[in-house]
Amino acid sequence: MTDMRIESLTSNDLDAALPDLTEILHACVNKGASVSFIEPFGPEDARTFWHDKVFPSVRDGATLLMIARSEDKIVGTVQLQIAMPPNQAHRCEVAKLLVHPEFRKRGIATLLMEMLESEARTLRKSLITLDTRSGDQAEPLYIMLNYKIAGRIPNFARATDSDRLDSTTYMYKILA
Picture 1 (tube, one colour):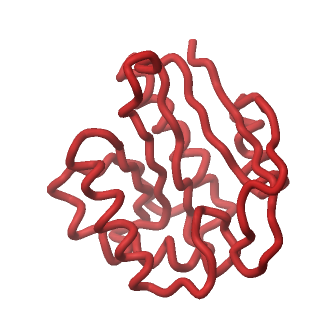
Picture 2 (cartoon, rainbow, N blue to C red):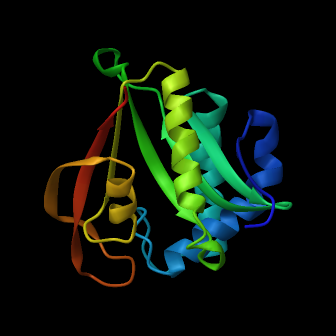
């Protein structure tokens, strides 16, 4: 891994990050990632997601957006959703752990999750939750990072490229 940096983006960083984030999401969805989208899914769909959904949440302080940067290119990202109802203020949620397909199997997802957990601790969060497609390549990663399976829901989400309905696995980690 050459010069890999993991960092949080601020409101001032978002516009410059948009092209790389768009490319990552588009590439991941078109490689079958189950992250709420279905084909056809073009670059403009990816751009709209970041610009209209994620960036306002980052600006409002409801979401932290972390990235992995190799040299000057963003190659991975994860979100930590921290705005929770009053009775769940101790909790946060992982969203959209994405690594560009050309940069996978280099430990980038692990580095992103380690930063996410560090940020959660800094915010005094004691519980992290997430969901992932059952049997997906991310599930063993989360287990390796000591996330526990809370349960599985069958027929939870439509597959990216067909009408098949996939199960999802809910997971959690209690932070010490």
